[in-house]
Length: 314
Image 1: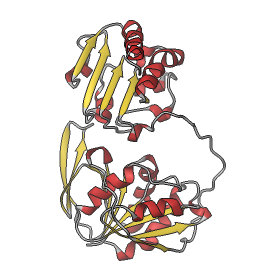
Image 2: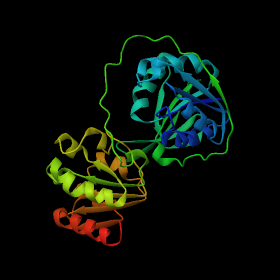
Image 3: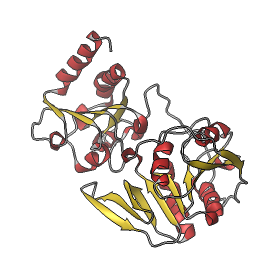
Image 4: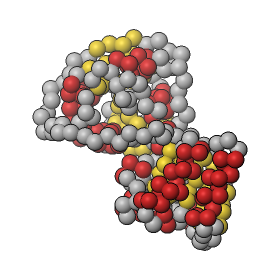
């Protein structure tokens, strides 16, 4: 069985999701080849070649793949699919857009967000916002799989795979790049952050996020997250959203501030190693999954915590 893993990268380097998805792909058995599609992406391809268990790296370096348009990337993957028994990608925003198109073009069922490889054709994945685990057996000869990377350890380096160039596929021409506004931050990206501080609807305003959540996150070198309620209310940008319809994270430490713990939010963070909850409602559902809970007014507790961290040199 040969597997094609689609890399998540920024052209210069691999994103953390790629070596984690590689762990899942390796468990299917057989060789794993990695596809790096981008523009001026040799750096990412060289990084992929160093990962353990990678037999070959395919580099598609073309302007068509410069801006993460789903249709050209899907066409490229399908053009290469004939040689592979399985096509695997991390369940990131980019591939939640791309992989269903690949499955449709190949006329197979996609197996989404797996958390365990039971056998090369059998997988476990969460359903009902993580309240149940479904075992899925894929009968298609060619499998299209996305991986919930928060449940897999990253594969380490030590490989020396060859990097081969592949030609770009014909562009379907159904979408075009117009422009982008990229948010820049010195904080860690949510999906790879070891510590995350998240705020909920109780923050009441964008200014309160800046006044209370962000200083605490900066003291800890943490990423900043938010519940869907906070995002919908305009208190935080969309890319901060943690939850079933946002980003699924599993940091070493997750601090939930003013988050009640709706099931959709818990689905995105309950795999965190240590969960700390700060909420004035002692009956809030978040306390049921928290390792440490503080029943307190966040507007008093968070500044005190930030101040104490400053005293110990954070």
